[in-house]
Image (cartoon, rainbow, N blue to C red; front, side):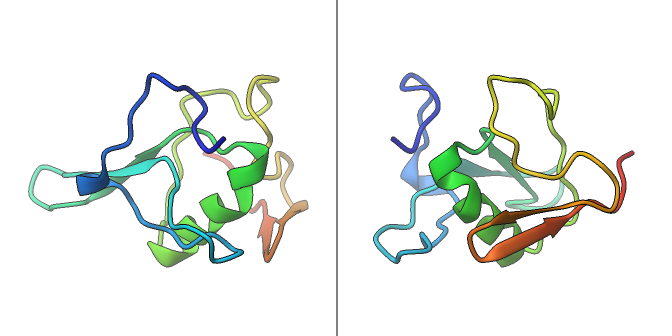
Length: 104
C-alpha cells in the first residue's frame, strides 16, 4: 500500500513522479501545487509510510527541496519517523542518510 488514506486521491496530471528505489514504479503520494507567480512552486505530500520513506527522500533530492513543513508533530505515533528529531543525529532510509541540523 502506497497511500495512507484510500479516500485521498493523487491525480496523475500533477503528481510528482519519483522513481522507486527498486525501479518498479514512480508513484509517491505527492502533488505539485502552483504558487502565486510560479507553476509547481510547492509539493504537498502525506507523511511517508515505512515502505515509502526512502522514496520520500529520493523526491527531496530529485526536486531540490530546501524546506519541509510538517503539519503533524514529528513524534506523533500515527506517523512513522521520517527525519531525526534531535540536532546532530542521523537516520538512514535506504540509500539516504538524513542528518538533523536544526529546527525553526
